[in-house]
Length: 409
Image (cartoon, rainbow, N blue to C red):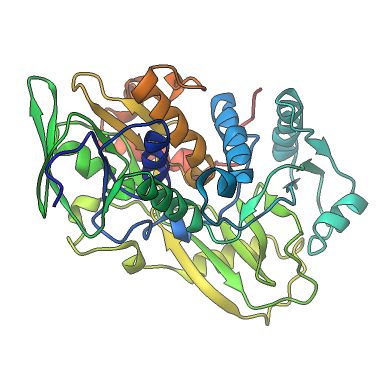
């Protein structure tokens, strides 16, 4: 058992594993990753694995752009495998409101240097043959967006690369307390014993709020169920076909091993209070509801040319965490020296995790991150988080209107 560490990272999902890797890459010694479950085994491997570089918030867009760049050179940088396809994103508006959102997205993408453009129906048919143009008002295309074939490769690769650079991984190890002495972190108590450390990173995903409470810290996030399914093989589906999103239906899809991966944002989001969950709860135990996805699929049945008799190969879901403004929480916690957070993934967290881990590690070790982290500070929240009801209402708004926010450059 390790009894002393330079940094303890709690959680080995995308944010935690990326932070651990980038800390070791910058020369930090004594990095220990503690996870109550197997390494990189919870929500991250159940993600859709989509990147979207044009986000409503320009700060997050810059994170997403840097992350795509890091994914492209992931294997070169880490020595770990990562299978991805870069077919671009086709985003679709069927109504006037979504047309305005997409026109803003095109302008924002061009301002960001992404060559986002309007597509004709004929151009769309080449990139996304399963989509027909019925009742479509506008199509936007970002050519450098990509998807991860197996999303779990990303956090697992970062964790293994961190281990090769000297980090210690402690799976199936529960954090039971965080020691604070004279206003700063002093140690972490685990199911295997105490680890003395001056620095803690809370990247525990759905459990991040509970971890922070052990240090008397309130982290305003709410875990929400998010689901997707993967069909059996569909004739004509190819890995090179573009990611597709139909905005008013809050539905996304991409190819997966000859079938179609489809997911979406529920109109009545199911939030979870992890303090009421069994100590043995894992994300694989999360109750799922296929009827939600069936309703979402019905909403786009006029545009998506898929035989209804095609069976479902896999139905999976996770517990990403939402924040009141749709941005993650990344950085130090004022009042407790040495305590950092990396949470509030807001469903799209896996796709920005390379940049989140890199910039947080830079902030911790040099004080000068390559991208500013001010927009992600835990201190930014006001009345939206003053009560649990207000927090949940704000998070529900962010989740259900995910594609309705107008981007800015």
